[in-house]
Length: 338
Image (cartoon, rainbow, N blue to C red):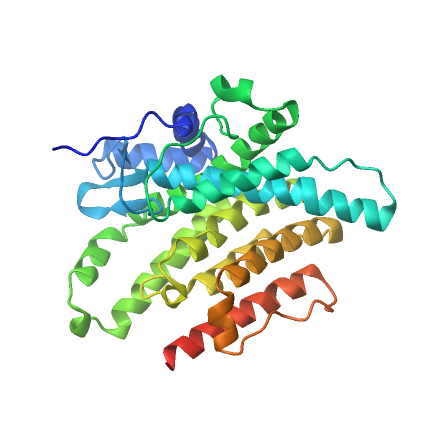
């Protein structure tokens, strides 16, 4: 008996936005992709998978010259971004502004509660495929009747963050094709583990870093406005911090064919290059909140290994962020030695 597929997901409201964003963000890159399509090196479509049993970020299928996108991953990412960013904006930042500067921002606890419910659903997707409750925040305008005016505004802003985050991942994968990485990567990944050399691994790591850099350059596009760099930095943060929660256990932070997840996260945020102190604080404070959540979710493991949260009495939010990453590095080393 064929497994029943879920009902149409609200994320499909952004299906064409994702494609348009991929094609139009950077004209130079778009022209390169079009040239590769004409030459038969890239298929002129994405493979869109519905009903997948595990969540996986977009990946290139080298032999088919195309990129695979999972609907389940897109659902997770939108809900992950909305729930964390809205709780940060509505709760944390308003609270800090009220306490530090005597502002009178009203904190909408209903919005925060509903964002938390969406977060619970997003993380449930790691274990089972369930339908998105359309009464919770989502990107489909047809469901806006279930959302408050504030939630509608947040949803529109999250759409922008989401499209940039997904764009980074798609540009990364397309970069493998247009930069001719695929042929050699196929040969290496077809080898058994005992036949894979350090030279093979280093080659793929170089390819992955090149693809990351190209994707980040497409997104940033020589942007000089600091608040805009900050907002794009939020998309970069969400694209590269979410894998910490997607992998099956902290031991998977160590990667074979990619930079380790924590190292990669630190590297890409340095690429953002924010110089304005307020914008830098915002981005790294948000990152700290999410990394703290990672600590809480794995608290038993960290405690058993005697790895404790960093001291918050550091000079900047950026310093604290990298203190968290240092703790994850300690975790990796401890797990390797056990």
